[in-house]
Figure 1 (cartoon, rainbow, N blue to C red):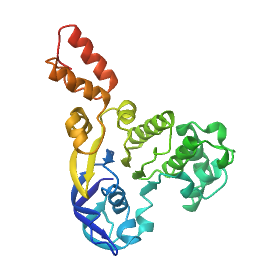
Figure 2 (cartoon, rainbow, N blue to C red; figure 1 turned 120 degrees about the horizontal axis):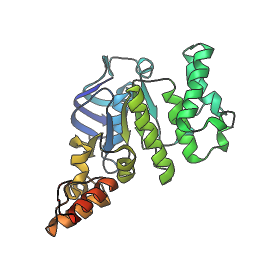
Figure 3 (cartoon, rainbow, N blue to C red; figure 1 turned 90 degrees about the vertical axis):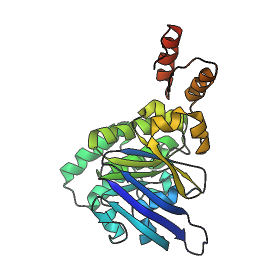
Figure 4 (cartoon, helix red, strand yellow; figure 1 turned 180 degrees about the vertical axis):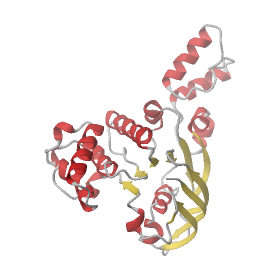
Length: 287
């Protein structure tokens, strides 16, 4: 399901400043878009405009249009939008409604009256996807923070939404749990064709787990200042710094080598960097 945003601006009630201004972008079916930018730049506001929370629930001055598939978020009830557009919050505790892992995965499926056999199949699939099969009957409080976040993701994935929105899902996770989350998201996108829009800033971990096959939407002071491929956004340290992020270390190394007259191209992952440096040492400068 594609997402189209045209001339989007939004200002919260009793605020004189626009949270987002003049946003135009298009996210294709099955695409993964990474939303980045400093705090207060409009990232979460943009995300909540995509599922109708703004302006359906959070009121303010809304201008422009947002369409998800054939749904205009201003004209379509949130209850209808959320059948196809799921949201995963930063803190998984805020979206749990049951006390056990199995019940949490089954709840949404029961609410839409799926047959018991289909619910069983999807619950088993969801547990296998996130690697929590042996915790099926465990209480949620017994899970680690990373396991809880994976459960929150699985609880929406089992419903097979067309779009998944994630608001800094790895902010409270360690590197290992973060990488597991990114790998699961890549698998969901590749196997189900799900459109994914995620706010996150762990650039190196994302690049190593997903590769460069994703879009980057960079926000600054409410404006969309960069809409590009990941390779373009993160291969130039100066550009990455300009959008408020720390460049991948391999990009900084490549830039330093370039200044010293030793070009290794534009690597963005460790594997690409190793390959490029080996080629340089062997007398070839192409990546």
